[in-house]
Image (cartoon, rainbow, N blue to C red; front, top):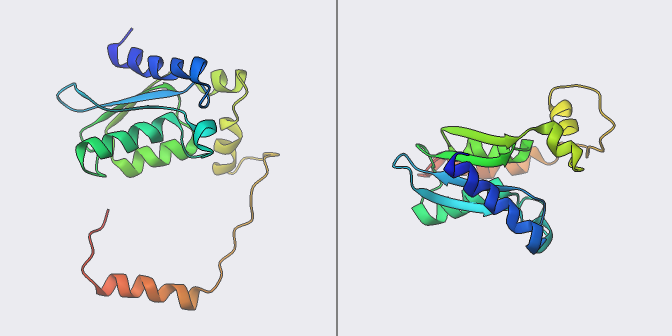
Length: 155
């Protein structure tokens, strides 16, 4: 077994005892082969639906490296990233993702990633999806215009 995937799986195994969340764990490795971030699912412990293993590892790596830009780093995760995590991985600029279990494996243990992917790809799904409506654009655009006029770092 790849040593980094083993570490990701060990992170996931922590929740077999801790029960902080689902059995999901991740590590982030820099170009030098050093683990710079790690995390496992804390959805239940933190009452936070975004506290997935990948997100926890990204948060840890960002704190450890002092940056939001994880370019040059690789993520090892014991399961195919859910759509939210995949988005976070893209925002973090990670170079590559290696995963152990696939979407069918996650479904087998009761997780619902596939319907979310189906929704994003325009496929019919019976998944509950909140409505999305624009409101008060004339007022909220003023903050964006002020941001554009100022000197701000973009990410």
